[in-house]
Image 1 (cartoon, rainbow, N blue to C red):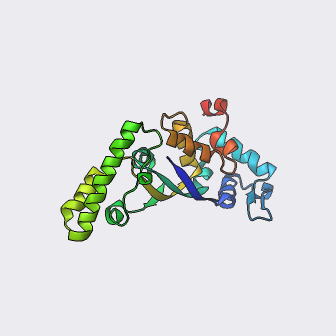
Image 2: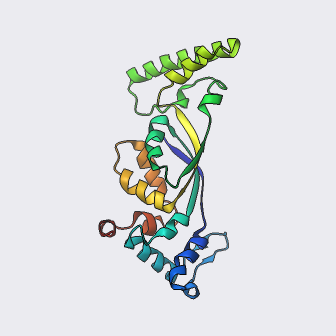
Image 3: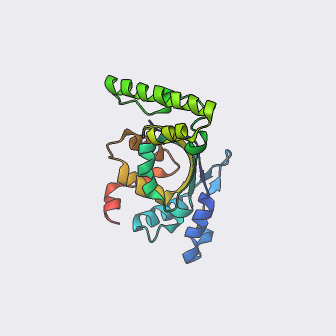
Length: 212
């Protein structure tokens, strides 16, 4: 299970201004904000952006300045894979260490959408044990019970992080993970495909990717 909320894309204007710096071609810029405050790339700017995108990572540095922020909720096993993309990303997460005891454990705290009946039964037993340890910790404040929760917590436990990325990060993630066996990556890459100009600047055509 993975969900994305409160997503925002920022600084297309600054990124395109920077893309024109090398040739001092700012006068050719034809982008503008629409009535809803969205920055719409004009024909000239979009053509330049696509050419730089196709030219490879050395030429598309401007995409590192297109910033994306989102609240992502996903299981710990997915976050372990996401954390391989540390360069250029920043995340603030909900605190498992400090808040694990703050609410009762429930099945929906865990990703269980592909579990068999036997696995769900095992998960429910683990939830019951964790909840028992939580109640003991609340009463006695003994660290042993807290450690039991932390060290037994399944990797299917869902965590929310507010993540900041850029379009260059998303190019790497999209093409590396779009065919991954985890459904969470498919949900993530499907979301990436909905971002402004994702088709032209992130996804691109396969023959263009191969030529980089």
